[in-house]
Length: 96
Image 1 (cartoon, helix red, strand yellow):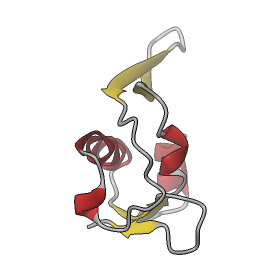
Image 2: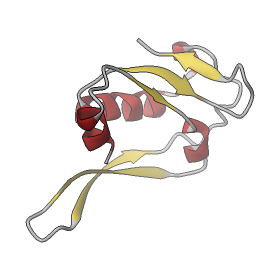
Image 3: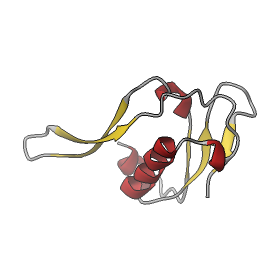
Image 4: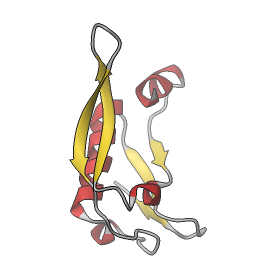
C-alpha cells in the first residue's frame, strides 16, 4: 500500500512515524509483494526489543530498527527523511 501511495501521490520522500509501536515485537513482518493467488509475501526482520521513545539520533537507533527503515526505503523507492520514535513532540530522528 505504501508503495502505491508513493507512486500515486508522486512522493519524493516520506516520514515514517510510530516506529516505537514496534518496540516490543521479537520479529517484524513487512509485506513486500503478493503472489499470483493474492497472498501476501513477507520479509521477516528481527525486532529490536528496545524502547525508542528517547532516541533522537541515527546512532541511537538499534541496528535492527535501521535495517527496517532501509527495507522500507528499498521497497517503496523513495528515501525516509524523518522517523518518529515516540509520542513526544521532539521524539524523532532525521534520517538521511
